[in-house]
Image 1 (tube, rainbow, N blue to C red):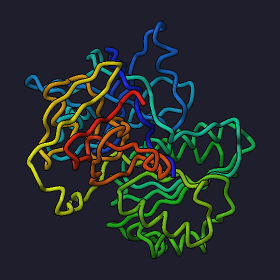
Image 2: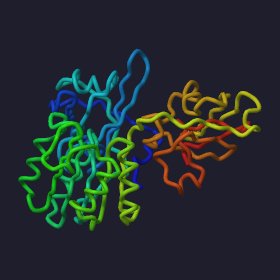
Image 3: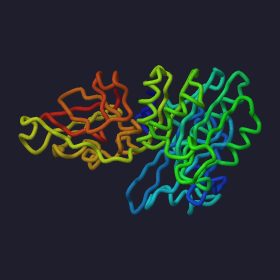
Image 4: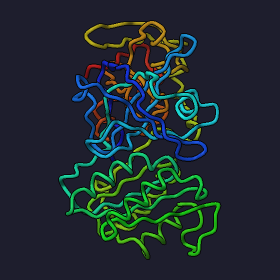
Length: 358
C-alpha cells in the first residue's frame, strides 16, 4: 500500500497568488497557482502528489490537502470538489479569484509515479479521486513506452470532473489510453457501466473488460471503494506491492475504543512531546487525542487532516503506551517500530513520550 507520506516536521507555508480558477462542474473547480521563480524548486512535484493549504478563520488555523492535477512540469494546479459546509472547498470553488493569495506548503506524498519508467498502469478513481489520476495518466502517457487504463466512477455525466481533458487525452493517445466511465445514477448502454464501483462491479470489470496484466494499479476515491478495490485485486492475484492507494478522508465514524481495566485508572497521563529538539510536557485526559491536547501548549505540532489518513502528525512512541483509534497512513512496519498518528492516539500509561523528530 502507498499512502500520503509524512510531511516534514516543520511545515513551511508560502503565499502563492492564484493565477486562475476554472469551473469544472457545478460543485468543483481547478485552481492554478502562480509560483515565483525563486520557489520553482520548492514546488517541483511528482505526478500524484498533493499540496497542503492553510487558512485562518476567526483566529483558528485550518489545513487541508488537495491533489495536484497537472502533469509533470506544468503550472501548479489542484482540483477541488465542494463539500457541504466545507471551510476550504466552498471558498476555493466559489470564493477564490485570480490575484488572491493562498498559503501553500511544498508538494508531499508517496502516491507518486515516475513517468520515465513507462509500463502498464491501471487507474481506478471515483468522484474527486480523479484529481491525482489526471496528473499520473497525463504524465505517464508522455512516455511512448506506457499504457494507461482508467476506470472512473461518478453519479452522472454532469458530475464528471475534467471530462473534456480526459476526452482530449483519449484523442491524443487512442491506442495507449483506455477510458471507461461508470455512472451510478445515469443509465448507460452497457449495464456493466451503470452502477457503483463496488466489489461486484469491479470484479466483473476486471475479469471481462480490463486486463490485469499491469505493472502498477493506482486507487483514489471514497473509502468504501478503495476497500472493495483492494480486496478484489488481491482476490484476482495482483501483488500488494503493485497497488498504490491515496486517501485523504474516511467517510465513516472512528471505531469505539475499548481500554483494559488497568487503563482507566486515573484520569490523565503525563505526555511529553519532542519536536525540533525541544521537549514539552503536559497532562492529557485519557479520553482525548494527544495532538489536540498538546496543541494547546505547543501550537507548532505538525498536522493536516486530523482524520488518520495523511500521516502528517506521525511520531514515534519512545516511552509509555498509547492506543491508536484508527490508521490509514502508516505501514505495518512503521507501527511495529513504534510510530503512531498523534491525531488518533489516546494516552494509556501514566507517562507517555512521543518524538516527532524520530
